[in-house]
Length: 229
Image (cartoon, rainbow, N blue to C red):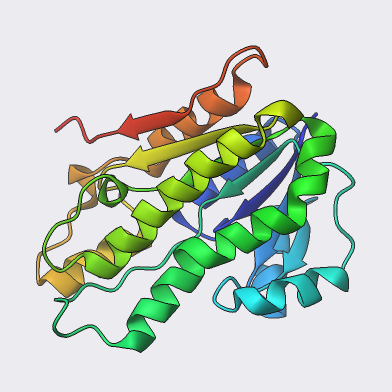
């Protein structure tokens, strides 16, 4: 049985991944942005442990986690949390940029840094749920795409830095997936939302688990998942 730390377990890809791992009897540690959210996650995933720390305030994560019990080892750290706000470069404010970069990039970098001892102890794996926007950027997606391009750079650098410790690093690049975030994107785009057109979060979770379950003699570095329609 492995020990897995997951962000974004409240919905979408993170929730699907947490449910699959819980169903296998794995030990879960779920990051919540506040105590109320932690209680919701504990009720949704009986037996899971929770950690409280807000990715939107990465400079406070070290203090927050220093006051909580952490796992002694972590077989994986799955970064599934994220935020999105669309808008033209000429319209996006520094507040939007800073909020997007905090949750999507700086927060994951800091959480990874803080949990590196546990990951090294287990010769574990870090999985970054990236996006197709992390490979190419379209109009009105600049802040989100920049954060995801940065997340790819973070993963690639971490992989090189930690190869001697046995740590594996995987980036998963889903296309449009039927999640609450995608519903928000459609509202921002002024389009009707039809979840049947997009990838089921369970399918992305399957890809993610494929990377986690790969024998230790191999590493899946980059996985692109696209809607088949």
